[in-house]
Length: 156
Image (cartoon, rainbow, N blue to C red; front, side, top):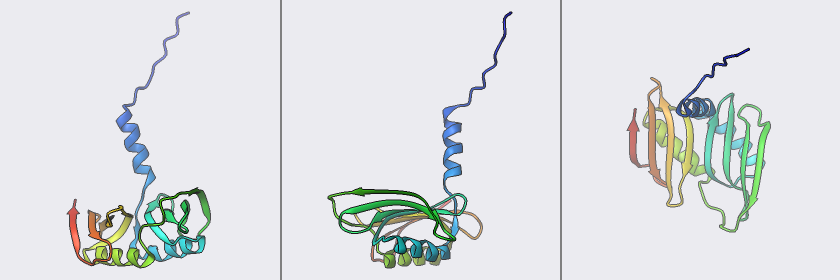
């Protein structure tokens, strides 16, 4: 007997798109209060990246002190730890303080952002915030750490 099997071929780009879209989500800007509370309770002192994940989760990457770097995922609502990874690094702590995060999100809110997906900083001190306005349009805002002036804004 000759049995013919059919294979379903899905382009790799479609799989990557599906995986990427399920990975991140948006949260109201004021949910940063819960995220920062949980992150501070965990021990974060400097933030490199805060990203909202699907199903009410947040991932925080940053420094606990001058040697320990952490990548932690937890529930935004109750702070339940879902993932934890720590590394000892010799580069020294750098990133955004809690005040830097709040100031940057205040600037984004003044530009019309109501929900955010991610806020991060690079080593040169540029903070990037990705989010949406009240109409669901995507906003990407960049500003220099410590400044309340927008360096660039992209409205999609």
